Image (cartoon, one colour):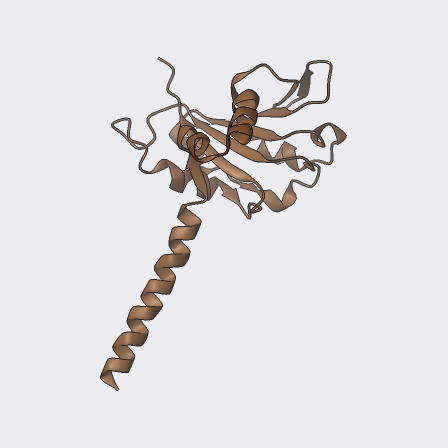
Amino acid sequence: MKTTVSTLKRNSIIVVLFFLSISVLKAQEYSQALSSMNVTEAQKIQSLVEELQPSLYVKQASIEQFGDQSSRVVFCEISSLERLYELNQEYQTVEIIRISVSNPSELSYSMDFKNLESFASLKYIYIVFQYDVCGGLSQSCIAGYANAMIQNISPKVKLLYKLDIVE
């Protein structure tokens, strides 16, 4: 009987750790994610992140469009995340949402993926941390912060992050 109880406890702990590891592994560091993708997908996301694309800039007071074609990228101030919940036809073609986090007070912001109803083409959410969030230029804690910021993310959307401190 004692052996059965200890086996049950051990198995329960293993199951809990398994589910915790799944939730922690949602967010991927940008360059590591690129190396694990097929070439076509890696080139596509590099193009979205690193090249000039038709874009929307979402701010608290306005949404500005740049480029003549339908927007593929949204740059969003973290304090304006709720603007992404608005029904907006301009969001329909967006493939990536880029969010910048520039100081510790912004870590408290979060976005509920279920409320992004207008983003029919969304494939990526890319969070750029612009300060030394973990200390010592370590990236050990960033995946946890990224996962906490984006709630109820679809398995079809990749959550990526990058530490990018501009001196």
